[in-house]
Length: 215
Image 1 (tube, rainbow, N blue to C red):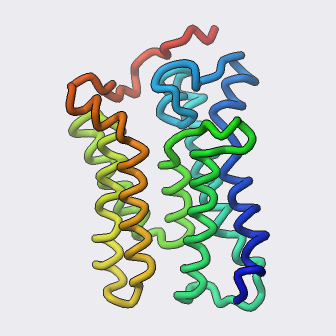
Image 2 (cartoon, helix red, strand yellow):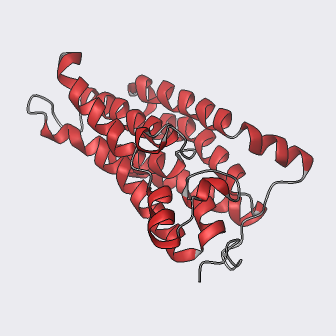
């Protein structure tokens, strides 16, 4: 497959990722830009913290679907066999485009979130066993520590281990991709790492009241 054939799909995946669900939901229903509150990120966790459960869950689901929809675009390419290594490799490019779109959304002045939910949606579309294992690491870490940022980094860090365990040496590209993604996740959480070290990182609580009065 020529890269020129993939280019329109990469652009479409980026535009899907650029849909700023947190920003649009905050403005449409609460007249609030979530990026001006809490951690300043346009993601599900900050939306939950600032605007409450319904908004946070809605943003989470939309952001998951963005990643899943991006990698599903490849099914419109006729000369690729779904499930093949080549198919999975190109899915990774599309998924990465969606994650970049979420972090740097063209529809929200290039100021988005950290891309974790979109990343998970991408992995669900490529390999649901890897996504499930990473989600279990994330949930376990958050359950024990109450830090979503730590859970996100741990889930990403374990992804190459799970790829090696499930696919062996046959998926070298997938393995290196997960290593790169793990590095990107740590980089986007560098401010969180500083707060974790200082003991000032906010702990997650699903029962915590919204920081902003939404009534």
